[in-house]
Length: 134
Image 1 (tube, one colour):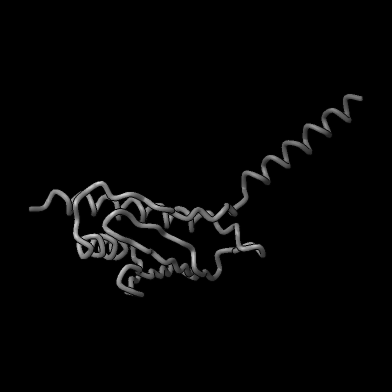
Image 2: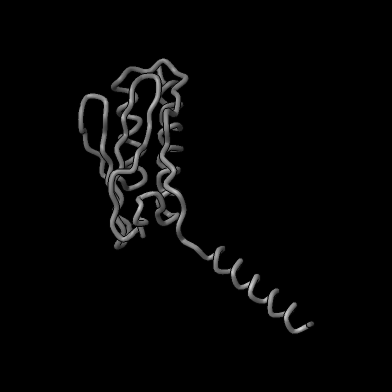
């Protein structure tokens, strides 16, 4: 009986360890991050472009109110679209390569979410800086 308890504990511990080692996470899009400052459309655009450049994202205009951003990190690739206005912005997953995208397209390597969160943070910081400029 003691052996089965030890065996059960060992199997549970191994399972928890393997779950903790997973590199997969749900895709976390940034939806409707608000801008609480009076900035022009061009100031918001530039805040996004500058934030992307600071983090190594290649930014390109897609339309008057949407940018696309691509990031290459070693052998990994991610592409997002960033619709924006003077009231807010969002960051949505578009494509990736070598980031372990799940078959259903809902999970991806956790580094992707970190990269997008860093981009979101830097955009918000740039917006605050631009709001303070005369």
